[in-house]
Length: 202
Image (cartoon, rainbow, N blue to C red; front, top):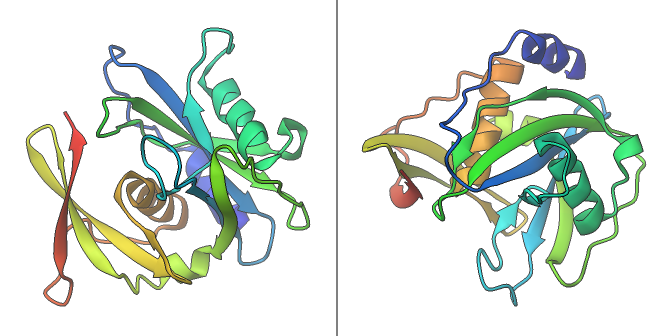
């Protein structure tokens, strides 16, 4: 599967947003299993924003960062103890804007399957991984309606071992699955899916 993802992302032209908002980056880290696992975190319940939410390792761009890829790798090392030397960066997905107005750039990287993580207790309550095959099956928990630039985009939300994976994290996952794996996950609701609302910003 990783071979397919590498080949598809080489030819993918990621969406760029106007360069006017505060910036952030995340790392979508995939293990080198035959069925790759994606690394996710549960943000600390004590944080002032996004507390308890499921997210990729990442954070805000710092003036000392050389670029947005550096931001993603730096934050991944700070949050989950993943050293940049263990990450093979294979591509970028389209930029998205968070509900707090951050312009977020997702980077996709491959990491060894036997790597051990260390959660930063000031930022995270948990680190866990989910097989991509789980998401490809599209047995979703619900469908979120995300409002972006006065349009509705319908994004799957998944439940895995009690964790709800939704919102911007689910949107980036769906783009990875569609563009990297050819999943063709519909970004609109189906009759069997209950819809809830999420505002991403404008």
